[in-house]
Image (tube, rainbow, N blue to C red; front, side, top):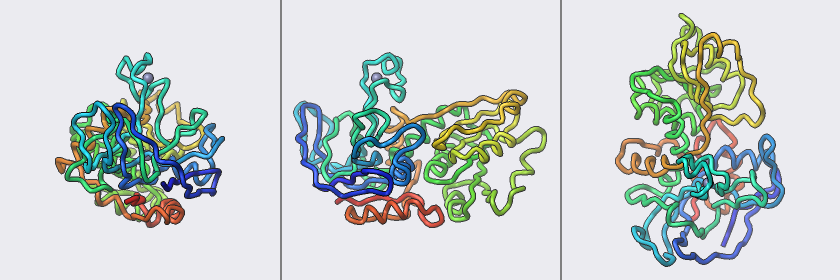
Length: 344
Ligand SMILES: [Zn+2]
Ligand SMILES: [Zn+2]
C-alpha cells in the first residue's frame, strides 16, 4: 500500500509499506480522506517544530476518515463498508492523567504522526490503516472529507471548553487558518454574541466571514483596525489565539477587557513573547489548549446533526499521488484553506 512518508524537510516520499492485520478490538480501514494539518506542514517545511525534530522517517497525517474493510474479533457497533472518522488520539487509559480524565495529557500518548517521542509515532496517511475500534466514530451521512475534519474541529471544541462560558460573550480570533475558522464555528455554536476575526491575508478573512465572523480585520493593510476595540481597557471577553505569532497575541491582549481569557491554540514553533504587564494589570487568564479527547465524538455528532458545517473550509482535494503538490498548496494561505488527500 502507498504511504506518505516524511524523511526530512522538503523530502516527502510516497513509499510502499505492508498492510497490517487487525488484532482483537481493531479494524482494518481503507483510508478515504486525509487533511493536511499545520503540524504536517511543519515537518514538511522545517523537519519539525521547536525542540521536536524528525530523527527517522515518519508516515505523516492525523486527520483521517476511512471505510471499514474488516473487523477484528470482539467488535460491536461497527460494520464493514461503514465510513468512520478516526481519532488520532490514542491515550493509554491507565496513567495518572488518563485516570483523572485528562486523556489529552496522557504520559504515554501515541498520537498519529508525531515526532515528539522516539521512535516516532507513525501517522495515518496510508491506503490501509489498522485502528482501534475505540478510535472510530461512525460518520454515516457525512462525506469522507467532512469526517476527516473531525480532528481539527475537536481541537477547537476543546479550546472552547478551555475558554469557559461563552454564551453572550464577545470573542476575538487571531489567525484565520483552519483552526481559526473552526474556532469561529465552535464559539458561535457555544453562544458567542460577537466574533471578530483578524489575519493578514484577505483570502482567509473572506473565509472567516463565510464561517460566521461578524467582522474581519486585515491587520497588515489596516494596522489600526483594532483601535476601536482598545477603548475602556479593551472590549473582548475571550481571545482565541490561533496564529502562534507573538504580534497577534500582543494585539489580542491589548483588545481584551479586564478579567478576559486568552485561549492559546497556536504553536508558533518558538517561545512567544508575552506582554506580562498587561496580563497582570488587566487580571487576564491564560489557558493553553492542546489536542482533545472526548471532543472528537462530539464534533462528529455536531456535523452529523448539521449544527456545524465544515464543508466550506475544504478548498482543495488532491489524489494520493499528488500529495507533494497538495503540501505545497496547503502552504499557500492566499488560496488554500484545508487541503485534503483523497485516498480512495
Ligand atoms: Zn490537525
Ligand atoms: Zn495515559
